[in-house]
Image (cartoon, rainbow, N blue to C red):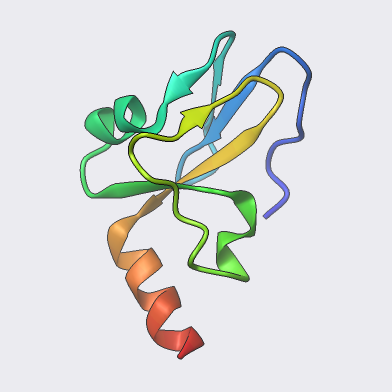
Length: 82
């Protein structure tokens, strides 16, 4: 799912369906999770390793790309990996 590329000075959040939300300053994962109930903030490699879910207190820095993934998708990925 190579939807968004890293870009210096910009934080990118990829939503289900491919919409890319762009921010110019760091944010806490908890801010994103509050706006997107029943979703996790993950690293892009989550589909290969479903343990790459970020903690709510994680700081999302500019220059990085993160995915917003429904809880049920992460749960299914974890089930399939066991």
